[in-house]
Image 1 (cartoon, helix red, strand yellow):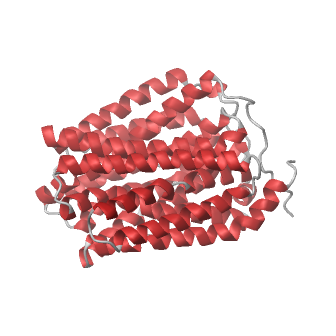
Image 2 (tube, helix red, strand yellow):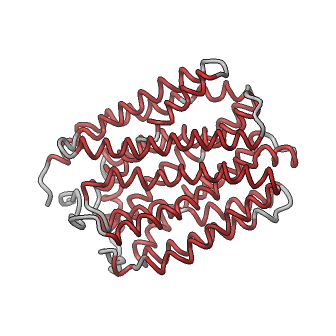
Image 3 (cartoon, rainbow, N blue to C red):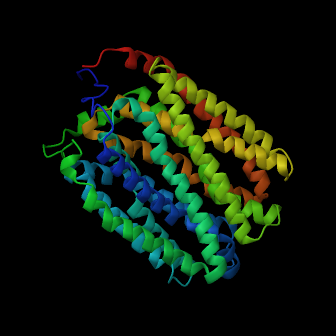
Length: 419
């Protein structure tokens, strides 16, 4: 019979050091590069759609294939990073996705672009989970929700810059130049990272002992609390994945914006999302220090508010009110990332944090970021884009339901003495 589950096996550092903030800054920068490489496609999507006569589903598949590869490979690659070293694994990932992004500047047709985007996804597969594990290793436990949400806000900032810079470069020099510029940026960061971040200073060591697969599975998947937390985070990110892809099309097709203006406007919406992620994470940490069990309750509030705002937005006609409601929804919808990152970190040992965050990343991608654009693209082809976007309240309601079901178990777990 299994022994007691450890909420955490080490308290970590007592305070945040200058080295810790340097690790955070470089890891945040690489996550930005990761998502700039993903989101540059949205910036140049209208050009590609016109030049290659792509359907909405084909264009969306170029985004979804990245998230699909990330989802499928996150877990095995994160386990290898825990076993053989997180820093060198991270550098190898960043190099691969940057080279694959560069390759996008030379492809000649849809199948070649699909292959290049698949390689981007392979490179990016474990970065989010390994990167956040590195960050959490050098900071105190009481900052986990803030750090989880702030680190993952790098993904939204990267999307914002990918859209804005990609649209700007594409408008001036063509879409191929946008891929080249963003690929080179990632390569430069990949070269700098290992010069500053050393494995020996992270306070953790690679797992060299023989793996007990049954015990690992129990730690990662053996409780209802974990399953529901993974599900809640993944299903709600269906909304962010969809809007990151759909906003440029919505603005060009229904608001008559030029490509460059649509890219800049989409970037502003993504900035709102990033600010909301950080703000929600800080709120969770602040309130949970007094009552740790409040964490899932805050997530329920974020989800229900998001559902209401999305319903108001997409059942309204295009106009200022619709845009204001979308912005309001984006401010709270990704608040789930700080909640789920904190809950999973508090419920699994530090030694397997890359792997546990990989399972969370798997749910983010397979339940949310991968199907979001593709399902919405299929619905948009069958009906129209505004009709397709009316499904967005549903994932938020499912997320809220999952978190309602975690409240009692999480309260019992965080209220128990650490062993």
